Length: 328
Picture: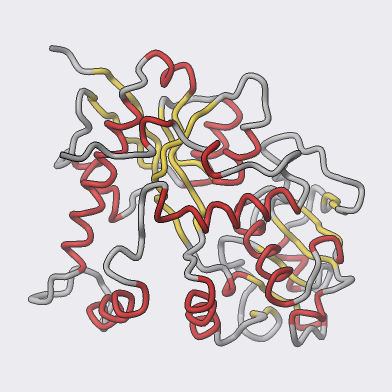
């Protein structure tokens, strides 16, 4: 019997490599895996819907749920997670020393709806007393001029968002003090620890404390299926979910190998042991139930920041076929 041909756009992660090399294959699917940088994947999927399945910004996907018709449906697979305290950069000219110094300042973000800044703004509001609407946001390209929002936004009037000049980049403006701080996913090229610094220099300790306090490992990306592909073949949601889980299991097993270093870090095994000790054996959990609190928190942030017209529930995010597993 012939298999369904599907194209998946996803970056080259250790946790998805078994799908890329074919050692794990989804039931009934002949998968064409395109290894693309995340920004390219997001732009091409959101703007042009070029792929059958794609890694997608959790925020962009959530914004898309308010379109009619909804263009995508996701499965509870999270190829990217990231603690974001390390991703708040400061211009030394700003004089900012602590989080509350951000209030009233000019803050750069590549896109207001980008997932990393959604988490950063929410964490700063919840844990450090920096209201989302207490700053002015400036959007644009981080390293190349002219980056627009991928989707049209309809923000409330208390959220102030402006575009930087088309010939400028946020990395340049941060170095020169034209913006005071920068919330981003990628470390800017202007970061040097002198003219551009981090708000949390001891970010590893801060992020561990955040995890111990909240139990959350922030979700950045999910996996989205074009809705017409899903509606024509609803079985693929569970088939893809199972395959992503199986691919991730191979990575967990690799992490446990101690005879030789699987990763190119001198203390790789020590980092693995520390992660297991702090966060448990399934620290990068897939699936709906283990991630309910994290998803609920993200959706609250998304709504509070004017990106969701109403507060969504986590149950509204995913294909029902992938939200529970068959058990014998």
